[in-house]
Length: 202
Length: 202
DNA sequence: AATCAAGCATACTACGGAGTATGTTGTCAA
DNA sequence: TTGACAACATACTCCGTAGTATGCTTGATT
Image (cartoon, rainbow over all chains, first blue to last red; front, side, top):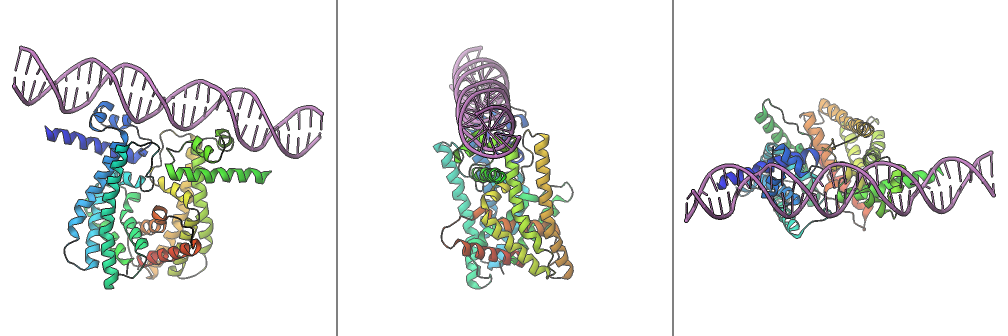
């Protein structure tokens, strides 16, 4: 019964991610999302208190996909280069698996403040921001560590950090899913991007 | 009189770029833009036939900023490495100068199809896409040339191309203008990003 | 068997925003 | 000086959409 509920919720989240991705989260209406589910508004408002809350749930889920996969990699006492490469590879692979969610996230990379948001929605947004910071710091630490040890060239930490992270997110912009050899294709892209990410730091 | 007209138009474009940047092009209303000009809708609709046309004008202006600066660099018979570095440096510098416009562009990197667009607006969008393709090909040619000559590592051309271009656009995401040492700051960022762009290809 | 709530659907309201129709002012040309 | 047009402002209309209030159905519980 609890599983029924969460499965219905994630089904809504998946549909919302797709609609937000295709039309943009401002243009896509709740009715659009409901229609893509073969349902009506009632179903969505039963699970989410507002459109902003639904959007935040999509964004949070996107971040947690990545955070849950990459966090365990950090503490394995490898060299900065190998650790970063592992993180980058895993990041790209997971991005490609859950692409619609991350397309939505990138729509909101800059546009933080909507026109009218409630306190509750602002709280959700700040929670998302906290997770994003957490994730960013994983990379910041590795970069600082690598620059200190001489594995990486010493650059402005902020410029390097953002550039690398954005490069790892680049498939969100251009990747189009194919049917054939999907897994292999994903791995190849992840491998190349991980190589480039490491390369641009040396 | 003609100058008066174009100056009023570019003034509107600047205001639109700022509003679109801050609120997102879907949320920002024509009234918002007019208000930021101390004017009303009438002024805007006198110069632009619709909101979509105004948005397209902003996007087109953004691309032309860059295209006009970078295109002349290509044909100077330098090595691929030096040419690419020059292109990248110029690109970043111009991006930083005209930041609001490019923030708007990036909001629409994926979201091509709005909900209801007229034929005229679709024509504007296809013209923008053509310019974007033109610009992309400048880099594609240099990359192919450099991979052939051995200056660059042979990678998937598409992956490398998009990654480099996105890296050069990365300040659009994180850069916040300061008052102090602005020009110097711009040049330093451009230099670092150009270095990284070249580095990740070797 | 009756009750009750979860999980929706249906039918409404309210409002913001795009677009339009029309009015107003300044400027230049004949 | 007048008429004509550019460059706006003002005052509307109309429609889509977020949100709500309420009704319906089904399965679990007592």
